[in-house]
Image (tube, rainbow, N blue to C red):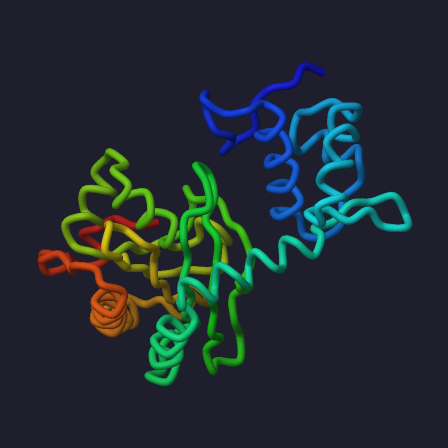
Length: 252
């Protein structure tokens, strides 16, 4: 096996050992639970010997914990970083009221996502809807950036080319149906901060509840809340065009 860069690993200008260590932490973060040394080797593309050399520093500083069965998981330092990030950015106090208000208005479940790296997005906050059936999304989960309405919004306002992304930039919203999960659908809108795109606000749930009428109603609730959150965070809300109908967008 030859060692190669993993998706999202920085290109040039960095220290190889640091980049590899961060790739290991990133692989653990994306996993659904503890992983074995063999799993880490497969996920990162690194030799087991390389991983073991780096583990001494990662474990010593609390970023990785070795379990009794020999598996590896994130250590307490990762938790401390998450708490510090939230405390310094004050996002929870701004975002959760918006998500809760959307759900209180009878929408589908509401989420706030940010871009994690070149290929992934991270769900920072989530409020479940009051419907009996829900889609499976949780705060802390990581998803591919190229599937799902939230991912397409992040790509669009990061400059992704193509007719689909031109429409999102023009109208300020995205629709996905059956991309991440064949039984689920979502609508999403951008949220801007002082320096540009900050994240994306989305409503997601079972695809069967995403009729054209419901999509239009959710879009009408979502965009004003995305604008409200943008202004709260110190961003500027663009002058988007009036959204085209669902059929005209050709979303699938």
